[in-house]
Length: 224
Ligand code: ADP
Ligand code: ADP
Image (cartoon, rainbow, N blue to C red; front, side):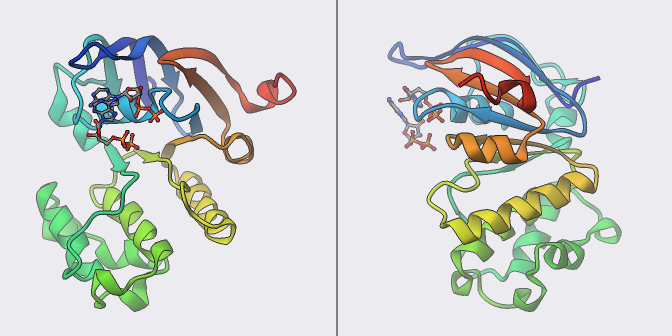
């Protein structure tokens, strides 16, 4: 069983723009999987389909074996999405933001692990600070913690390092690698080839909505 399976997925937006054209690929469990492509390739559209924000026009997708159409509840329970844009209420503290998210996902009080997640993301000192006082890097780490509150086996990061300086990028990579070592399957989108090469076990390349390659990273290097 795959962590994520995408089968013949197409998306045509209202107005006629075709953002995805018959895309199929599987993400193996336990991997760090990179979705690589230039701006406008269709990466966000694919992520938004997985998160339920965008309806696909055709094809099928499943998360941890649960079909996105037939079994959305279980599909959603098995994935955590880290959006590209930083968004949370500036007046909540990181601890409150995680507790709120846990509530939204119906995680019982006895199973919550907000402090553990804050420690994993090195935010324990900021647990009770207001979110608006966090640095950019701290905010991105808080978004990762938020996506993990319901302990999903798969986490998807949409351009985690877009607009991030080199030092913070390196730091975010370390967190991603750590999550993966702890057993989480990681999917990330990026338009940086070196980022995908350094982090990912396997890379899918999309351009103009079409999948143009999907290979283990070591086979891709040298092709370009
Ligand atoms: P990427 O994330 O790879 O930059 P996107 O998935 O955001 O690519 O966009 C793929 C294509 O679909 C682009 O041409 C973009 O302009 C278009 N697009 C994205 N969202 C919409 C929308 N809501 N309506 C119409 N076209 C869209
Ligand atoms: P992102 O960078 O996260 O892909 P965009 O800046 O492409 O986001 O899109 C911002 C908003 O505009 C989204 O709601 C997206 O669906 C919409 N959008 C993007 N491209 C188009 C487009 N070509 N036509 C209509 N809406 C679009």
